[in-house]
Image (cartoon, helix red, strand yellow):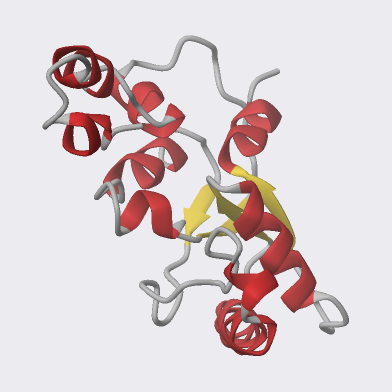
Length: 157
C-alpha cells in the first residue's frame, strides 16, 4: 500500500489519490514507536530476538521502530540474531512455491535462534511467525514465536 503512488503514478485518474493514500500508510510499529507509552508497562523478564520481516525491513526500511518499541518494555533484553537480514523462508507464498529452499532458510533462521538462546522471538508478520514456528518444531528448547503486539499486550497490566 505504501507503493500505491509508484504503482499508480502514471494513471491520471488515480495518481493523486494513490499518493495521498500511500503517505498515510504506516506499520503498527511505526505508529506506536512515535507515541509515548499510553499505559504503564510491567516487567517482562525475557531474552527476546526480533526477526525483521522482509516486507518491513527490505521493502519499507522499517528496522529501528520495532526495536525501539521493545525497549519500552521493562525487563526485555533484545538479543541480536546472526544474519539478521536473511529471510525466514515465508516471503509471501515463497514457502508454498519453493518449499525446499524455504525450508533451508527456515532451518538456518532456527539455528541462529537456537544459538541466541532466547525466550521469545517476535516479529511483525504472521507468515514469518508460522514459518519460524515450523522451523523450530522439534527443537530441544524452542522459544515461543509471537507478534510484537502480543508482547506489548503481555506488558500492559
